[in-house]
Length: 281
Image (cartoon, rainbow, N blue to C red; front, side, top):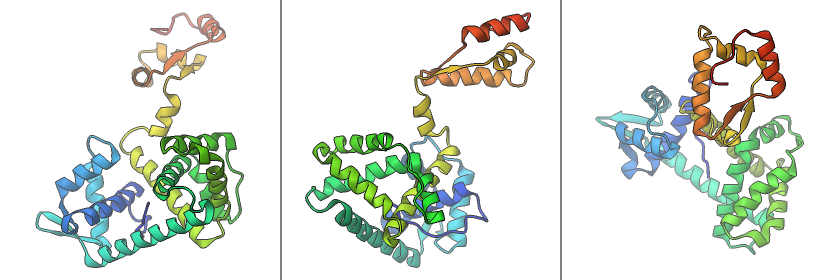
C-alpha cells in the first residue's frame, strides 16, 4: 500500500518529486537505510520496469530529499535520516491499520484475509489507473461524481477475483468496493482514495518520462487506425517536416500489431485532389 511523504510539488518537477517518493522507500527498505547512487538507480529502474532512468531526474529527486532533510549524502552512500525512518515506519503502520479497517467495514471476515488483501490491492490499482481522476474530482468537490460504466469497472474486479480464486465471492466483492468508493466522507476512506488516486497519478507522471503510457499502449495494441486525406497529403510530401514523424509512427505501431488504413472515400478524394499518391499506400 502507498505511504506518502509530503513535498512542495511547486518548486520542483512533478516527475522528480514522484521519483523522490519511491527513492525514499528504497532507502527505507535497504540495509541500514542507505544505498549507493548506482544501486538506487538500478533498483528504481527495476521497480519501474525500465532499462534505465534519466540520471538528471534521479539527481533532482535525491536533491529534493536532501533539501527537505529526508536523506543526506555520506561518502559514496545516500542515507535516510533518523526522523524520516520514524516517519515512514509510522506511515506504514497507519496504512496497514487503515487497510484492515476498510476490509473489515466493507468485506467482513468470511473471505481469506490474505487473498482478500491481494484482491483489493490489484482491483484498486486497476481501477484507479484508469479512472482515478473521477475520485480526485469527488474529493475536491466533496460530492459523488458519476462513476464510469459499471460493466467496465466490474470487469476489473472480476479479473482480479479470478486471479486469486475468489470468483464465488464476486457479487459481494463488487458491492463492497462500490460501497467503499461511495463512503468518501469517512476521513479514513477519503485518505485511502486520495492515496490510490495520487499514486496512480505519480505513476503516469513517471512513465511519461520513460516511454509511452502502458495503459495507452494496451488500448492501441492490435488496433486499426484510419487516416484522413490531410494526413495522406503530408505523408506523400518528403519535404514536409511531419513526413519523418509519420514514418516513425508507422514503425512504432507495427511493434504493437497496430496498422494504418484508409477507406475508399478517402482514397478517391486523395486521388482526385492530388497528382501523386502517398508512398506505401
